[in-house]
Image (cartoon, rainbow, N blue to C red; front, top):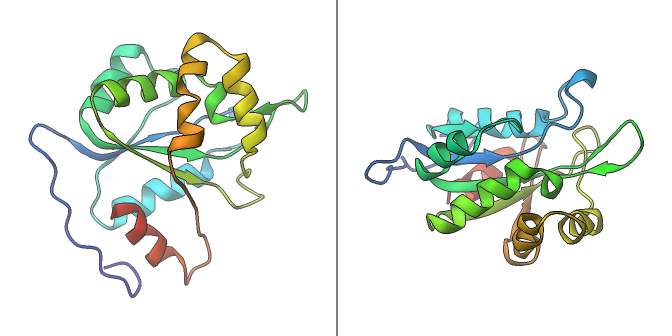
Length: 171
């Protein structure tokens, strides 16, 4: 149970180790932790009994494949960051994200999205994300469907909203 909302125990499919693999990016690790929203989400999911993997942007293709194929669901955490040059750096500009989406599609994993709403964590810019897809590599262009096909729910952070939000993600 989290707050007033009871989350049913989750079973893992045969041969799986994780309920969720969180796809996120770290734009400016030297400026603090821009993925704090993804880390909070991971902690909240773990608190209700989910096993969660978070791959780093420098993960190898074999690490990505091992993690995604061992997960029931790929959770796209969409938050935005500005680089030092004021250029938007989003999830869909990350080669690691492209590979995670490719593996999730090939292994027929459920893909859900959570978009950040907090200014402190960096809300996403869907127009900038779309530009990253169309101006990027062939993989980025191939992954552009996720912006249009995956339903992104808003991450709710108010104390009274967190239980219902986590319950929605788990469902």
